[in-house]
Length: 211
Image 1 (tube, one colour):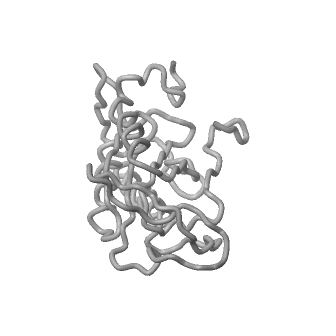
Image 2 (spheres, rainbow, N blue to C red):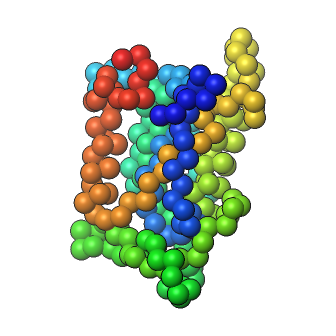
């Protein structure tokens, strides 16, 4: 976890030349600004969401209802962060085909094992352009964060809370996020177990600045 201007932030972990609109499973982590524990509390090994946490969960689940290419596998909302495994699946998308550019071989696409787990194939892919691709992980994250900012600001106004509203200068979530491409069924299960058990090990969580 890096610091900038004495504030904790997540450094970029984007995989070079990976197209983040590609069909794949992604393990994502989003953290509140300054790791502030405003989404809820861990009580007896379970998360009890605050009102702001409930708003975040509602906007989070809405993201999957409005995006046909996006599917939710596992997730947990913690006091100051979210963990999730999400899947991008463009049915009939040509990006699932092998792209023969002579080199630049990176993981791309997925197959399904007999147990139903998705497994990445190793294929040639097109380079990721330095823009926010539509129907991509970055567009999903940007839309989700924007929706949260709007709804939280409405909540602040409605309840006349004496706190600053959220905007480009005052982020609710850290501007960056952590991502990891899930490469096989074993890795999927390990990450899924980590997400499910996260509330139980909160006291020792590296994101828990109160420990």
